Image (cartoon, rainbow, N blue to C red; front, top):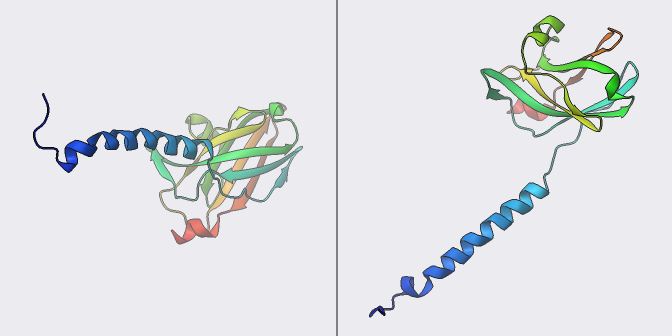
Length: 156
């Protein structure tokens, strides 16, 4: 049965479905080409040279009742398989190793090419806060390094 009145909507509504099919292509391109901020300065800790890279420049977000910030930890020297466990936190001082072991957030995890960590943080950053990375080797050595917070995090 043909429509008696061929309005603009009836003539062109199929074009809207074609436009909707193009949206996934745009979002697929965005997901395949992510952009990340620059990594923090590389530092020496024991046998390792480590650079931490935040995954975005936003503030901490809430996850499982805690505030966390995501980082990629790159090992430019040393074998990450020599690390028994590692933890990251953001604050004026590093959290104690016993406190970090109690929870499941802040743990360094991933492959030998790069580790990921959900660093424990406060809801808001202050000028006295630093990014702390504590690692324990299989020999029981505890090493801690820190980075200053990026200035952009303090202005938000």
